[in-house]
Length: 216
Length: 251
Image 1: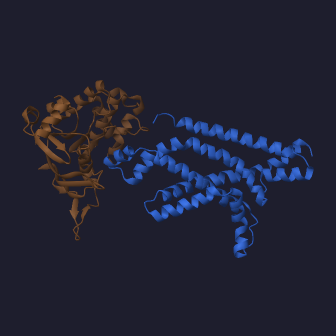
Image 2 (image 1 turned 90 degrees about the vertical axis):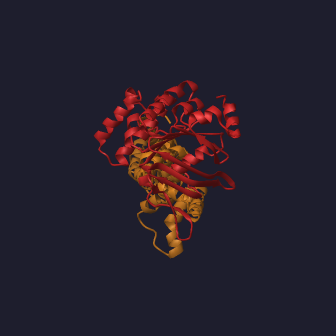
Image 3 (image 1 turned 180 degrees about the vertical axis):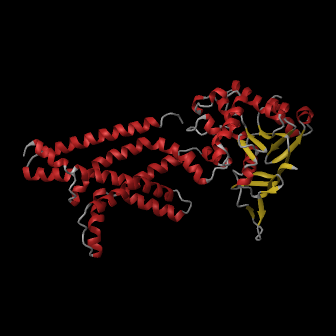
């Protein structure tokens, strides 16, 4: 198989790689905020349970969680494994990444000085207004570098979908590598990921720059 | 009618009783300075007045309207809707607490627009006039980080004034400033006093308190040790504790 054919066949899986990437972001970014708010809840039970769940999600491999979401329903309830693997992949990825994002959000929110809340309270802002108008814009700016870090990792983690044979780019590459006994597909995959992350880095750099019109 | 009436306020943090029964009334147009040693309860009293801390006993009333009530079980409760009280007072913090992501003009006009729901154009004109009065006309589009401490504090005074409060509290407004910047802030407060703005000022600037106040309150160890006209208190106080405190300040 020529190099060009390899690239062409593997790039057919890029759409699915992008699907995992974007769907995971779309679901995990807001879900992370919900988890962060639950973690910071004044209700100790909610806070403790959330803390435990997050520790499990961060403390066990994503690959294991992916296998559990994909095949767990079959082993536990005898349900058929869904043919469209995108659904379990996105569920596992979104929940796992939400756990990481939640801790980034929490760190950001707790880093805002209490004086900002007090100034807003005195001026009569409601709790929701304070959070949306005063706190969050400052939080977003502070956590952006950490979020970029996670997004870069996500690009590479999409390759974990090969464990459930979801036909994304890396899965296809691995199949070619096996059938052709060649290492070249892995190099192609490496270049693809690097290029993808170069774009991520550029976009996130732009967003960071657009927010750096003030200093803390 | 009193703008502010605090009655027999008590406040503890754990076992530490910080305020042990303080009553304070402030009339319209009156300027009251609160002085006293650190840890004596001055700032806590201000935080209780501005509802940043909840009191353990007593009552706070604005314009004759009580903030708290005693429920049928005899427990002190705060009223549900505190927003109407927040419209009555403003607070200037020691470390400004401006919103760093808002420009100066946005810092000043955001609350009147988004909290009080007032017309944006009208508020902006008002705020620009206030900024001009404070010598900040050219800073409207600057961000807080571009300003000196004194300028930031003047902006935060404008931010409080933009809400048109009946009474303005200052919590050590010059304590976070370099000595050469305190003057410009004190001058602004003095100007407000001349316009008969009702103010309560916690301060360590004795000369300023003497010059600007109608009444000086000396708080020590959680109680009002002495209060009176500035010339009485600073002139020849009969109170040993006051004398000792003022001596340490060399005034």
